[in-house]
Length: 93
Length: 166
Ligand SMILES: [Zn+2]
Image (cartoon, rainbow over all chains, first blue to last red; front, side):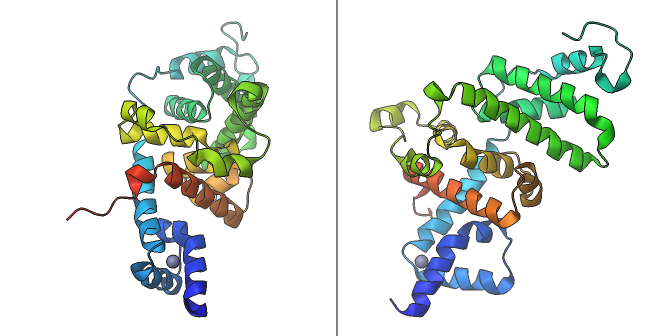
């Protein structure tokens, strides 16, 4: 491997997440893309990170079985006399 | 506010707190937030702070349970080894589903790496917001996020590293 390729490889390995997140300048993006197209390590890395980030975003919806705790929280905050000077309606404990 | 409470609950659960404790953490966070609400200028500053309090609370709870639950001694060491803790072939058969495997891989990450991944990739916070929650500079945050993704990728190799169909 030539020096240039080694440097591109190292750069790509370090910044592949930035590529996936779209936070690189056009020039840096082209540098990684060109390298990843032909590198046997960086190509699968790019593919895997794109998939991974896509799959992780799908975890955002909590499983349906999860209980909703919002009402309890709202009740407790409303009932707390220290809450922003609100007049207490019930015990804070 | 209801929406934020449920979101925060989901996040705290992902940080490893069991249901009852997570509920306690979120309630505590909101009570503290309510008391301090006047100090915040904008909504975004307020929610950054809300996440930060919840994370610190969750960490505190987790540290108390550290002996059984978390290997906190060395994040680097633990990060290298999350591949080893990926499901065995038999276990994998029980957890065929990608979502379950992914949840397991995320849970196996040490806290300092799990937090950036949860905030950015699962909760969808921007890099700037998530870095602010963690009180890190963006480059440091990005580097941690990248390492977390690499560790999850390694643990999920069989699921993610497959050639594109077509
Ligand atoms: Zn490469």
